[in-house]
Figure 1: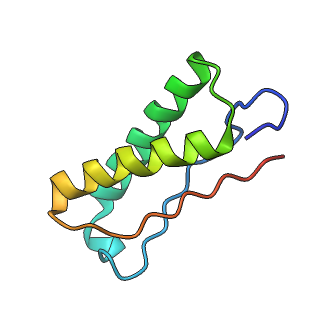
Figure 2: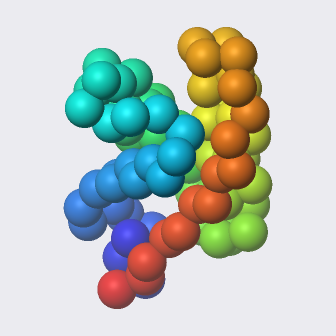
Length: 83
C-alpha cells in the first residue's frame, strides 16, 4: 500500500501453509483474493488508513468466509507492506 494515500499498489497475495493444498484449491484461493480486493476497496472509499483497523477487519472478514466455505478455522496473519 502507498504510505501517503493508502492506495493498493499490488496484491493481495495469499499464502497457505498446511491449511489447504493450493493446487487443489485454486478456486478458493482466487475467491479469497477477490474478497480481499473488495474489502480493501471499501477501506479506500471510507478513508480508513489505520493499519491496525485494516488488519483486524480483514482478519475477521476472511475468517468468516473461510469458515463458511471449509468449516475450518485457520490462523490468519494479515501483513501490509507500506511503500
